[in-house]
Image (cartoon, rainbow, N blue to C red; front, side):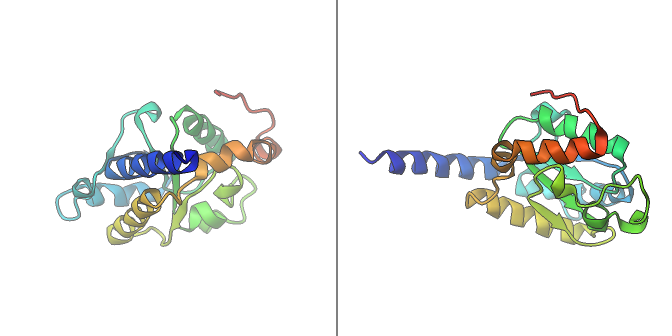
Length: 177
């Protein structure tokens, strides 16, 4: 029996199962948090797609970063991400996680979240509407089902790159792994 076939088949089954139930931990650092409650309530009802909130990082598959990040919050975000069990996914909301948003010229604002953590996708908007959030999360589910969402593996494979970027901003970072 072809070993690559068996490994590939198991991975396809795991990707399919991972896609069916996504537990999200929303790290609400700014105004993006205001768009999540309507996305979860009856009008948009993200739970019908198998997406729901998680209580702790150890129960979560998906980390939503919903606003700007300062250097102080980046440290906490890294701790939170490293507490999550693999496979794990990161989604950034709006322009804040891409370029700092309206705080783009602040010395203390983190720009380009994907330099510090592996971001699967960004959801555009300032802040993204519930329709955009659902669209983005459904695209993430498709990426997971197709085996394309591999940020946690990129993080492990490029650990030195991520640690170097994290330490250039934060100084020493205590590791939970």
